[in-house]
Length: 333
Image (cartoon, rainbow, N blue to C red; front, side):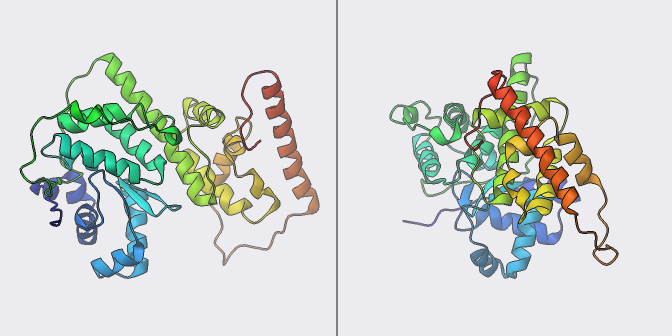
């Protein structure tokens, strides 16, 4: 089988993010992420850090640093630490210049190979409101949006799906064009329904991103489609807090509780409980003293008792809500 070709649009070099935010190192690494031999048509693929270091000529530590910068600072990719897969958010906007059944077959084949379905949900929810997709990709996204929610109960029925779109045949089935994920998009006016739909999909994608961050930090497997999980995070987001606020709380409590008796409370129902979230968020925003100036201040048994007593009260409140029918019991509760 001849090697797959990846074609990067020249608009990559004119994009505002590339021009204003990217270092020369970033530009080189982004081109690597778009064109390396492990890429898939879907834009979700496993990436071995050691192999990436060998292929780019960077050190192992440099590749890890670049991946972290692209995920947290540039917000271009999402990584799964449990499966070592990465997802380039808008890869499908630019990875298909021609379409038809061969491309759809390739996309559905890639879907089946994705191990972390949270990445698939994240990508699809980001693409559903785009207006610059080809007919083939648009049909694929509309079909998949009903299958990635709930994420872990996807039923693939593709016998008739692949015949829906055949906008043009590929001249070379082994040639797949990739434009930059930063090519400038055109915007068109949309009705209120489209705006509501876009907002809802972005909202659900935010929940998926938060749970994925929690799983990566705690090496757990909470599922973003679980009703009780979605409800507790939804309340926080609807109260005006952001996805970054939720991530900050996760990072703060993982650092504080990991390896202690409180580790068992690193779960959605506790971290995003109405009675605690504001307190946790303010604690995460407090400036921590440096290790050189920090004075020993071990917790007394009384302090630990107060911490545990606080959670007992929260547990009682959760039990009251369940008994009153205000919420459902989560699988881990």
